[in-house]
Image (cartoon, rainbow, N blue to C red; front, top):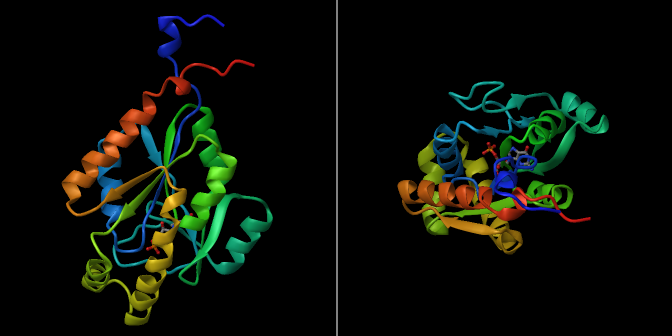
Length: 206
Ligand code: 5GP
């Protein structure tokens, strides 16, 4: 195979970027800020059986579905991955994800640690990033300050966070989210570097 400068002008399939974090680590703010500066990347909109929070827009933040609909979609193989998180079901719609990747578009998945594991198995070149809060105390404070969840839910999310953090070893990168601006810079830097890898351009030798 001959490598020419032209080989570096057309990239292969899109890249899957997985961003996971314990609830309250600031992942949503971080990913939304990076996406707003990244017109050539899509956010995968998940299906969930949890109720919408105030201000969430169906179809933009999530596809809110009943448990019956979710289970029907699951049985029909419509999810690239799925998981039960904090007692509710969440899944990544497969068809749109695969179509975008085929067209060379990068897709960001905001999913939990169980989903990340499944995606890594199917999309071998997926890039995974774990967002850490500055501390567990700060995480609890942020969860309470958010005011969107009931006290019982906050406790459950905080307890789950301690387990989720143990999964960080399976990830490629971490971002300690002490300062949002710095965290945004770091996520953007990871995306930029991954996009410049030679292997994203040059087809593998058979
Ligand atoms: P929240 O209810 O706070 O929006 O999300 C709760 C958790 O579910 C977060 O960790 C979020 O990343 C995760 N999540 C959202 N969508 C999906 C999905 O499609 N699949 C999986 N596995 N997790 C998801």
